[in-house]
Length: 99
Ligand code: FES
Image 1 (cartoon, rainbow, N blue to C red):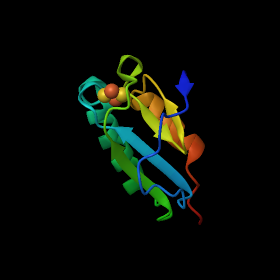
Image 2: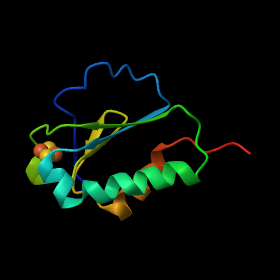
Image 3: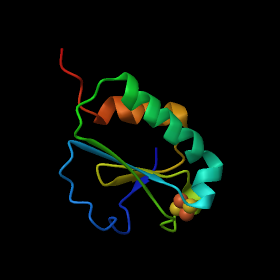
């Protein structure tokens, strides 16, 4: 899957979380799939009993609309993300629940 470094980090994002998920909420990404992707991520976080160190944020358009829907995980932006891709990314990057 294609990926690029994001142009900038949102203000106040200090990366203290074990995992950081940022979903582009710009109109292009949102209408092309991130409206669904955010629901998938929220459901995943609810059902996986993950530690509270997983951070979910949204951001405005960062100028990569043609490659969207875009999702950034731990500072790396992933393009053309659909619900199947996002589940794979979450399974790969998020800490596993203990117990
Ligand atoms: S709307 Fe997501 S990069 Fe432009």
